[in-house]
Image (cartoon, rainbow over all chains, first blue to last red; front, side):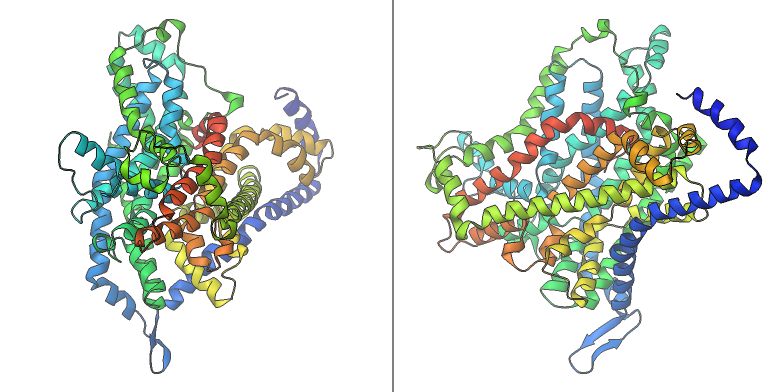
Length: 314
Length: 311
C-alpha cells in the first residue's frame, strides 16, 4: 500500500495546473478548520473565558458599603502578605520535594525490575500494582483515613497485637506524611506502567549489541534503560509538580476526620476553596487561584529549562 | 514546553502503537533467568498495594459492631455483606443508585465528547498544513500546564454568574476540554496516518469528511481508546468540580455523595450506623472500575507508550 500510493499520486499532482492545486489547498484548509473549530470553541468557553473572568474578578473587592469596587492588584498584594497562603505553598513544596522522588524512585525501580523479566508472575504484579489507580482519590483517602484512624484502624490494631503503642497518624506532625503515603499508594503503579511501556519500546538490537560488548544487567540498566527513560521521567515529574501544587481531595477529606490538624488552609487550593465557599470571599479566592496557577507554570518551566540545559551540555 | 517537544522528537518514547509495535526484546533464554531474591522482594512489597483493598472488601462484610471489635483483615462474627448492600441501596430512599447512574452519565458524556473533539483537532493539526496551526498547537501545549483544579474555581465563578451551576451540564461541559488528549492524538496521528494514503484517497475523489470518517478513524483506533480511557478515569474520579458545582444531592456523582456520608459519619452524633454503609458504598463503587482495568490494561500500555507520558 505504501509503495503503490505515491506512484499513483505523483503524476496526478504534477499534471495539475497551479490553479487547481490552490483550490485543493483551499478545500483542505476549510476541512482543517472544520475539524479544529469544535475543540477551539469549548477550549475558549471553558478554559480561556473562565481564566479571563477570574482575572477580572481578582481585580475587585467586595465591600459591605458600595458593593464591588475596582481595587487593581490589592488582592494580589494581600495574598503575597498572607501567612496562610505561604504556609500552604510551603507545605505543598515540602510535599513535592519528599513525595515525588520517593514515588518516582519506586516506580522506576519496579519498572526496571519487571522489564528485566526476572520476577516470577510479572504480569500479575504489574496488574495488582496498577490497581490503586483505578480507585478514585476520594475512596482511597476515605479508606486510608479509616486505616489510620484510632477507632478501628488496621494500623492501630497491628501495633496493639505486637504490644506496641501506635503512632497517631492523624496528628498535626504526621498528617503531611500520611497524605504523602496516600498519593504514593495511588500513583506508584500508574507511573510504573508508563515507564514500563517506555522500556518495552527500546529496540531489541540495542540489548543484543550491549551483551555482545559484554555489558552486564546493571550496566545495561544504567547506560541504556535509564537514559531511554529520560523523556518519560521528565514528563512524570512535570505532571507530579502540577498534581502536588493543586493537592485538594486528600486534605479536604482528611479534614472531615481530623479538622483541627488539617485546618482550612492546608494547601493553597484548599484555602482558595474555603475562601470562596465558606467565607464568600470570591474575589480574593480568584486571586489565590490565579497566583497558584502562575506558581505552577513557573516551577514547571524552570524544571524543564534546567533539565534541557543539562542535556545540551552532556 | 520543550519537554513535550522532546518526547515527540524521541522515537523510543513514542513508537508504541500497534502498527509499528517494537520487537520484543526478550529472548527465550533470557526468560528463564529468574531471580528469587527479586521475586520475593517484589511480591512482599505488593502487600502494601493490595492490603488496603483487601481490608475494604473484608470490612464490607461486617456490621458496625464487628468493625470496631474484630481484627481488620479477619472475618466478623457474621457475614453481613448482603445486608450491607441492601442497606446501602435503601438508605435515604436509595439515593446511592442515583449517584452511580449520575457518575456513569457524567463520565461517559464527558469522555466521549472530549475524545471526539480531541481526535478531530489532533488529526487536523497533524495532517493539514494551514495558516494558524502552529499558533493553535502552541496554545494547546501551554494550556496543558494550567492546573485543572485551579481552573475549577474560575469556571465555577463563571457558571455561577450565568446561572449554569447545579445542573448536569455544569459537570459535563468543562470536562469536554482535554488539551492533553489533543496533544496525544496529534502525536499519534502523525505516525499512524500515512500521507500518501490520504493523497491517494483524494485522487480517488473522496472528500475530506469521508476520508476522516472511513479511513482516519480506523487508523487512529488505539490512540482513540487511550484518550477515551484516560478521560473516563479522570471524570469518573472527579471530585472537586462536582463538589463545587452541585448543591442538589440528587445530582451528585458517587465520589461527592460518599464524601458527604463520610463527613456525617465522622461527625458522629448517633450516625455511627453509617460507617458500614460508607465502606460498603466505597467497595461497590470501585468494583466496576477494577474489572474494567483488568480487561483494558493492555490498551493502556500500548497507548501510553505513544506519548511516553503520564496523564
